Image (cartoon, rainbow, N blue to C red; front, side):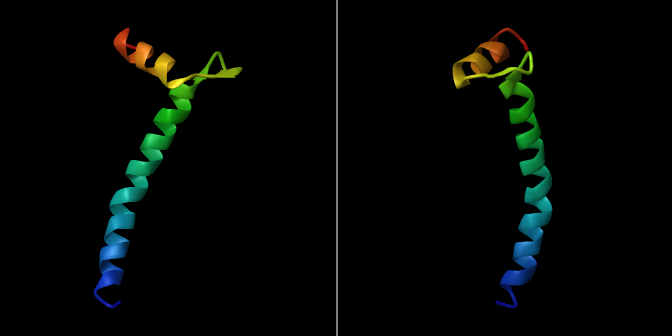
Length: 51
């Protein structure tokens, strides 16, 4: 447990920014016009068009 704690804090320190960036990207790409949710296909099409 003593060895696991630094490892856990390390993963949290690395993981938290990554997760927040992913969530913000998902949030940005899932809202189009701000009134309806995009599907995965719509997001893929956006990436293909170059956003």
